[in-house]
Image 1: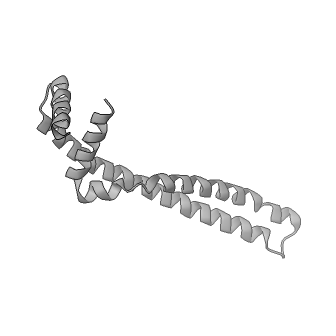
Image 2: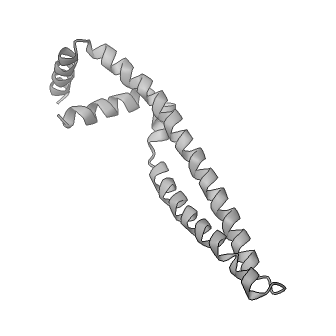
Amino acid sequence: MKEEILKRLDALADKLGTSAQFLFNLYVKQAHVQVVNTLTYGVFTLILGVAACYLLHKGISIQTNDELNWREQNKGIAPTIVGAILGVVAICFLIAFIDGNLYTALMNPQYWAFKEILHDLHGQ
């Protein structure tokens, strides 16, 4: 199994006109890029979640205020709907964010690189 993987890696390196060591180093560098990309994704998800909570709170507090007449209470419907939509989008982003690859790429980029090389080689 190990020799077959090495042969495939060498074949891939030959096709690209480079060495297997260069490819491995390239994957290690990609691990750091993947960490930055995933953290950016997570910050964006957090911002969406905070905006959704704020809009939901604002809309619901307007709708439940008994001192306002029904026309003024209906102004709280739009923020509630937009907040709910943003909340669903934030949950979808959060599900995609939690994949476990972030910690592997951050703590052990060599292992992440090896795992990605194996994944790519099996895809050929």
